[in-house]
Amino acid sequence: MTTGTPLLSVRDLAVSFPGRNGGAPVRAVQGVSFDLDAGQTLGLVGESGSGKTTTGRAVLQLQAIERGSVHLLGRNLTTSSAAQVRGMRRHMQFVLQNPYSSLHPRMAIASILAEPLQVHRSVPRSAIAARVNELMELVGLDPGTLQRYPHEFSGGQRQRIVIARALAVHPDFVVCDEPVSSLDVRTQAQIVALLQSLQERLGLSYLFIAHDLAIVRHVAHRVAVMFGGHIVEMGDTAAVFERPGHPYTRCLLDSVPVTDPQLQRQRLAQVPLEPDFRAHAGGSGRCVFGHDHQGGPAWHWLGPGHGVSCRYWPPDLARPEPMPDSTA
Ligand SMILES: Nc1ncnc2c1ncn2[C@@H]1O[C@H](COP(=O)(O)OP(=O)(O)OP(=O)(O)O)[C@@H](O)[C@H]1O
Ligand SMILES: [Mg+2]
Image (cartoon, rainbow, N blue to C red; front, side, top):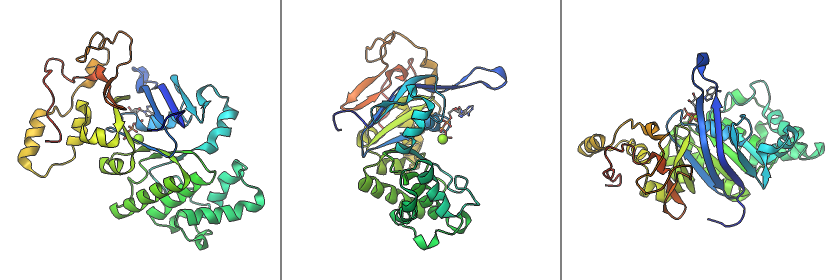
């Protein structure tokens, strides 16, 4: 980890959505905090509905927040005016899962890539064509295909176009939300390799959201595990994968299929499949680490930069024996 001010600093971020039919509000993101250094990737994992996309959108100021702060390049985005946030957009970009729906079907690639350059006036008009060519080469596409339309490209090529568009304005930070989920395995590997080489060449920082733990393990320097709107564990990738501390992280890692059926049965018997961590959300008092949670941060450090949210630990207070070792 580097010292000094991180590129991105998120503190106590919370987002709620109004409940359906006047029901209780959905607390999609609750008190999320993390830092991201320049040139680094933070992987964000967790089950469907845990709040990953909402976190990414809230960080990018594409989603109204309930509370919290987001500092990018030392600038507090949450207290900035709409015009100031627009000015910061060129520093922060988004790459989404479905490269088809995120490209306008009736725009040629040349126009799709020129648009952000015009909006942000990041290069003079006369230099736009050259920059568009350069972007095509940057993502491994033939500039000779610039007059074609999105449907004339494969899924992998379309995702390259989406990446080129995001990079057009020289961002520092990119949220990649399931950037390869809709692609076949071979194409996934190519796009992941492209994102990694772009990171090295351009010094980009990624918030990398994905279901696929193997991909996250491969690309992320650090990993945050989300459950029910909370980050329940965060640490360097090797630490989280090799020494998962939170029972939910262990469940998540264990849900990767195991080939030995006996071992699989053992694990299923030991690990609650749908542990109700939420039951402890309102808990106060001392956790198993002896931390007093009458207001203090619900976080327990397991090692340098590696911690778990101990308000959720253990998942079943009536059964405080150690959880089975997922590395066994
Ligand atoms: N616009 C919205 N209006 C109402 N509720 C929403 C909205 N967007 C998200 N939610 C709810 O917020 C919670 C978090 O959703 P989010 O999309 O962030 O999850 P996710 O972790 O990205 O899931 P997935 O892995 O399926 O993409 C869910 O309960 C979801 O139903
Ligand atoms: Mg999502």
